Amino acid sequence: MDLVIASPNGDKQKVIDDYNLDLEFGIGLGNDFRLEGINDRLPLGSRIWIPNTEYGGIIDDDNPSRTVKGDAIYYHGRTWQGILQGNIVSPDRGQDYLTLSGTCNNLLKTLIERSSLSDIFTVLPAGSPYIRSYKFNRYIDLYTAIRDMLLTVGQRLEIKAVDGGVVLCSKEITDWGDLLGTENVAFSAKRNNRPVNHLICLGKGELKEREVVHFYADEDGNISQTQSLFGIDHVGQVYDISSKSGSELVSAGRSKLKKLQEDKNTAKVVLPDAVGMSVGDSVTAISTTYGVKAKANITGVVLKIQGGLCSVTPKADGRADTVDYT
Image (tube, rainbow, N blue to C red; front, side):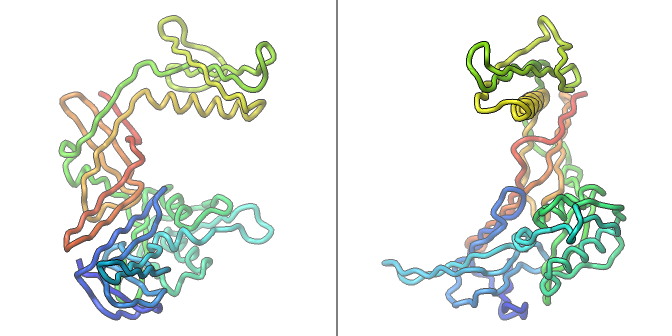
């Protein structure tokens, strides 16, 4: 893949094809890159990108070194996603929340302008779904805010680097299982008819003075403090959290049982390497033999280019988001 190297103001300087690049972006990833194999000294603030893709960013630091093998240097910086992540969406003065209405792309444009990023990001004016009165979480990073906002209307953020800038727009979420063939995507699943449905939460105190809270899950996984499953259907567990009491104990216990209930139907989808998969897309896998359908949402992407070979590895959070049995 060709790599464009541009000046800090975005003017193209050269195009190279011999380099090593490690780049990652997404939820829980660094949203950064490391570039090696370039002998030239690049100015800090230089931009790099692979044309017509979302792979690129800005060089924030360089790291020269000398070893017995000679001089070397690598460059490190934020991806486009990392630049967005470094800006915070805040409510206007005197307001509790920032609330906006408009088409997805118009809202993207507003957010970019509010963050003073119009010199690097351009938003396409093309038609996109309308969002009414979207309320942003307080003091949320811009990358997360955009992802959350677009998800409400089945869209994701598309980023494309071109000569002269970086173009943003909303794009309908793609299920890559449909494109690759749902029966060609690997997965492993587990169906558990009886996960823990009674959690005994032990808080602060000693012996009879110890604070104890009981939580129960019903047949449908609803959590309350009323028991509905007994005898052979009852599965209990003790949760020792001696540092908590009162509302903190209640909140921690409820969250713990909710997590335990998620073990009822689980699956892990093995995401195939594929250029074009992006954060917000999904992959569905189906076994018609056993009547299982698992779907995982893509939460990150890792790009590696070395010696002319390129791999693009999508990431999920380790488990399928939905599992259906027929």
